[in-house]
Image (cartoon, rainbow, N blue to C red):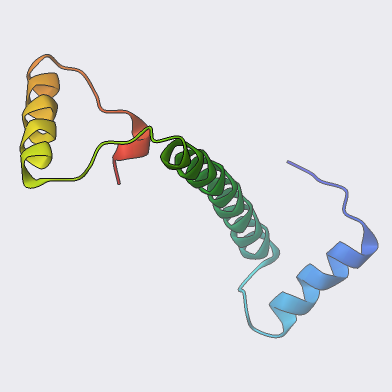
Length: 92
């Protein structure tokens, strides 16, 4: 793949490689894309936290108890037995 870069961006990439921070221009771009993905995940996480705060403010929540953990664990086991995958937001 060939990409046309703004001269300032090309210079920045070359400087990072020259300074020894990265072994190649590809490594710089790979790290930049990784950080972009991370930033997008953080934006989604912050939005989810804001939604959760709003739900709490409206009283839309369940108190955490050890019994609740047992119920959630049982539900997860049942879903796994049925071959259902958990929502990606609840899996590390």
